[in-house]
Image (cartoon, rainbow, N blue to C red; front, side, top):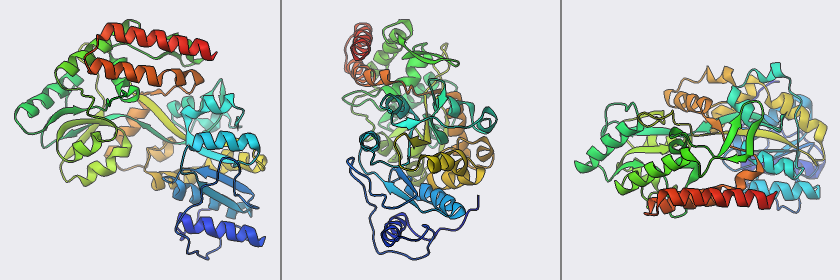
Length: 427
């Protein structure tokens, strides 16, 4: 596949593709420009792919990189491609549109959608061999494999890490206990307002609490590398989760964890110098770099005497729509056009997500992204099974309630009962 310089912005490329389709010609590689300054967002009832041979849906943050890869594939194969950004509920819009036969040929999204998409008959398995998959990190392949079948080509991976304001805390902590102690000392000295910004919020945040849960031996679903997650083995309410809940309660009483710290403000409070530590992902990196103070990043450490902390690992992937109008082209694009070192480098450069392909990982000369790559490769893939939909709300609310002062043991056991009931009712 030949890569070429793209001079159009995503909105102009979108308008050009639609104009070319309306005229019945063009391959998407024309150098003409458009004055449009917005990307169309088709409704769930029907796409607006015109006569494009390949229609791809993604989100607005990734459209530039995805468009470059798609247009290069189109030019190499003499076909017309179109990439559209869906501004709201990409997953839900895709499921609805695919069922109606008016969706895209390819959708780009998170791996943990796969259980829902497979259940709805919205995506098809891919045709990559084990040898071809050997070029990707093992965790990325695990994440994009559902029920023993590969459903997506992963390009970016992510996981939580621990950011540290080194002007406040110079030395890297060996454990989460050391980090919290150093942060509390900084609070007592009046240097910061918060020892640790770990998002809780009024409704709770099960995603950001996962490192605490796993360090104390807890789990949401039992995981086996050969069979994946077992929705019938829920760990919430069992011993490890109880220990984690008791630690969360202790940290709340010490004012380390607070419901006033949420996903909406945790990064901004850290970058404004009001917190010693921050638990967040690579999406916070740009803001942290702009903050103007010295910082460091490390994998989230475990607690003293406990297991290693294991946050969720997420993968972004290209998936083939089950009811797309051009499935053969879509399979060729995902299996071959996307699955190349050149395309993966383009996607990395355009999204700045830690790459899933190991050959690209080896070329990344950024210590911060290397930390996130290592953290993702050591983390557990976020469950993609449909049963996970029964977990987020009750578990998040349980964590928030514990931070707000509720009994940790009774609260986490009640959450486990609710999760098991929800799964049983859904099944």
